[in-house]
Amino acid sequence: MNTLTSGSERTLGRTLSLHRRKIIVELLQSINYGVVLCEGVLVLEDFEKNGFEIVRNLLGPEIINQAKTVFEEALAPTLDQMTILGIRVGTENMVADINQLLSSPEAKEIDRDLRMIMTGQFPLNVRMDRRLWVVPQSPELQKALTLLLGSPNLRMHSPPMARFVYPGNSNAGVPAHQDVAYNKHLSNFITCWIPLVDIDFECGGVTVYPGSDGLQRDPELLGHGVWYEGIDLADFEPFDCEPMALGDVLFFNRHLAHKSMANKSNKIRYSLDLRFFSDMDTSTKHYLDMRTWEIFEPNG
Ligand SMILES: O=C(O)CCC(=O)C(=O)O
Image 1 (cartoon, rainbow, N blue to C red):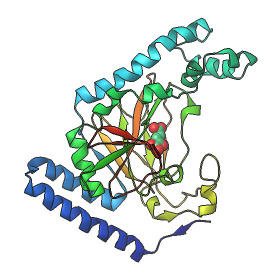
Image 2 (spheres, rainbow, N blue to C red; image 1 turned 135 degrees about the vertical axis):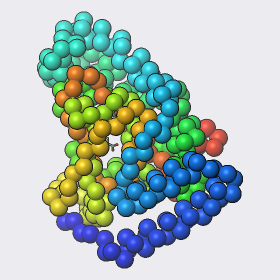
Image 3 (cartoon, rainbow, N blue to C red; image 1 turned 90 degrees about the vertical axis):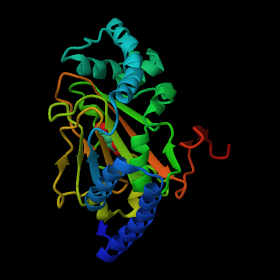
Image 4 (tube, protein in one colour; image 1 turned 60 degrees about the vertical axis):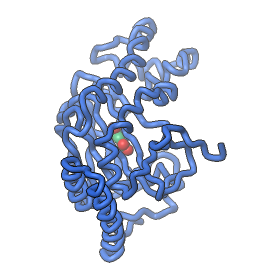
């Protein structure tokens, strides 16, 4: 059962947050944020209106390259390991071969990390690689987040989420969902989806449903296992976030429904999806404090 929030609730929430952000804008002006402030104001306007915004060219090539290197280094040895296991790596049969092997009795003898990679997930040690912190360390990203979250004291949920989608791996796609459902430990946050390859229609990316952030879900459904059951987006027009170039960042709010696009290209799609919040919000799980660059451990 889906209900819409009333217009006044929505407006009130947004007005309050705009007021909060106005204070931050004034604060940033007073310490001379200059040109970047203009970009930040643009971020605010579209994000407020649509629940998402693609900010072009926010991250420099050195940041993207460093993050991508971490993932390429993790995948490189596994390609040889998979070849040894009989998978036709780099061909159109690769995903079918992986699926066949993983559903065979031999699957449990395969190294756990390799199995994870074969199912399209990076093991924890890869996601915890500190070289990935180059992304939250970006002053440009921090300025945009400060404006969106209303505080310069930023935090990033840890470990960060990193994905790769082999060409034709339809199993790696995420169906339509709202991030709020899977991050109940956070009182508020913003997701940044950051591609590490050029995104076009072939390679896919993320589809968002503008306006869906007004949907309130029946809390009963939040208790279920994997995706929101019965998410009904029939009234919403999907918007494919493509093209996206290296350095572009997609910001979206925690209520905005979105899903993965298929990777129909012949390249691996690498991306990061990071969840940021501030000292005005709360978390009951690990996070990276972006002032001290220490991991906060709940009950630690
Ligand atoms: O990268 C993807 O394919 C999906 C990303 C996503 O669903 C998310 O960031 O919540």
